[in-house]
Image (cartoon, rainbow, N blue to C red; front, top):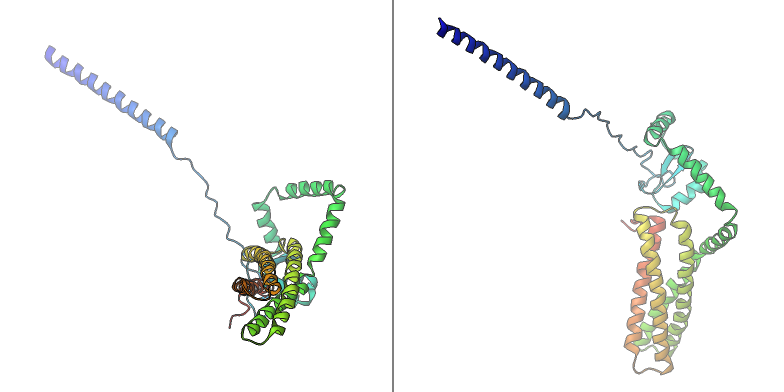
Length: 292
């Protein structure tokens, strides 16, 4: 009897211990789940970039646009094929609006997307306006000087043809003199080299002035082309002056030593003029303007 009672008492104790252990484990799991559960995050789908509003240039309607060449006109972005078309569109947009396709995204939708993407845009614009207004009175003279430099830079496309023609003509005349055509072609080469070297310096200076305005319009690959064109233009002007110095040594000594250096520099000058001219044309007409 006493033995049975001990067994019953032991069974009750074991049951109570098992129940308390299970309860403790359940409590621990509940705390762990509450404390280490991964945070619930609301996934916000990324907005796809706006598609090109036009794939063909409104100025040259048979040319595809370049994505990095565009302008904003009355709330819509207009893409063009080259910087020359960009300037034409900005000068007279009404002449080319008929070549643009109708907008697929309404103004309200675009405004709504812009509000979600940039909630602080209005405050930022106000701050910029205040800052610009603060500088207007103190920088009037500086703006006038920059405007004068930009105006002078617009003569670069006209002046740049002189070094191209004269330096190439100098090389051609020197080639004829080398073939035994007489001293008269050496005189022609000397005359053309003097004019071409001085014109190259003027074109380089005016080109840097013109680039002040162009740098604000060119982006992406066009900006890189502009950078290469500027520095190669300076290099060409420097090499042309060096060629002129070498040529003067030969002409004043009436031949002799130095002819090889002079003619090598003259050939290098012509090569540089060709490369710089091609880059300059690519800035206006597009990189593939010579493609068949």
